[in-house]
Length: 147
Image (cartoon, rainbow, N blue to C red):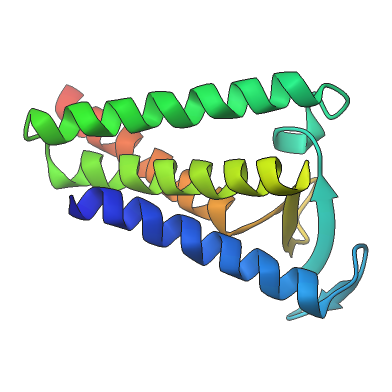
């Protein structure tokens, strides 16, 4: 249960941060936070790097399938008493996926606002960070199992 609560907490944190940005910054505005870190409010209609931005149905289908698959995977991990590292990673992945999916369903796009000025880095959000760290934990656990 606590892993699903972590997913809910992650999604709520993501959606709340997006609402703050929407209420405080117009789309397109960019504010420098430090030398390389910016808040930059954009709308992303596609997947990563705006892939499939002109195919709303495909983006929604892929997003929904991914969230469903991760949710089912987390459910299976919990029922077979898998390790905390893998369950935590999967819960973060699920929470990030839910946050972006809810934003996409509600607004027909995803609000991104965190930009690190490094090569061609994407602009991302809290859900993306949670999914990234969750994915790293799952891969790290798989690597440990192989050693």
